[in-house]
Length: 238
Image 1 (cartoon, helix red, strand yellow):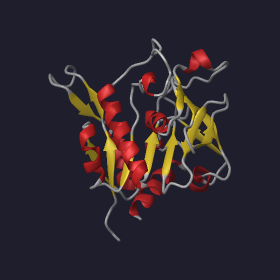
Image 2 (image 1 turned 60 degrees about the horizontal axis):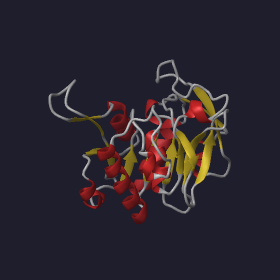
Image 3 (image 1 turned 120 degrees about the horizontal axis):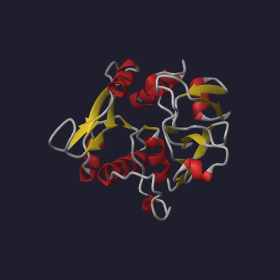
């Protein structure tokens, strides 16, 4: 059992221009580094929904990453997109297909930031399209300070998988989102909340490991952040 669990990592995608004259994939190195540090073997997953099931045949866990884009509100009954919403349909189509297939197989899933919102939608949940318009007195969830620093704290819900992993009632987190989970989806529960009431984490009890956090634990802003990655990789080992 010394083999590193293979962790499939979803990529971001950009159109031609900037780094390349052709469409390109990209992802921060700390996503991969944090998985390696946790004992996993990360592999990148290109956006081909028709291959989602085949990817799952060769990976032991699925990490759905974040990015500067949003899940199409048409996929969760949210009506017309807010003017601040940015869509990447090819990416979302793949991530939804892979996440739903992983849940059906009881394969471990970790959703980070936008990946948490994607997990909620995969479970039939709903989202807040733009926090400043829907949450009175909201915090600055798109924090002005660097992402390597905390933006605010979150309260961890007792008796949840997340609480057992981090072993604390509060965590300091970075914050880089303008949307949030409104309802977590069928069977899912909220496991972390910001001081303004915004949902910061969800999980699916009864699943081997299905957890989402709104912050970015790959930055290790809080000393317990690496524990989240380690618990995910360990679940993929079994």
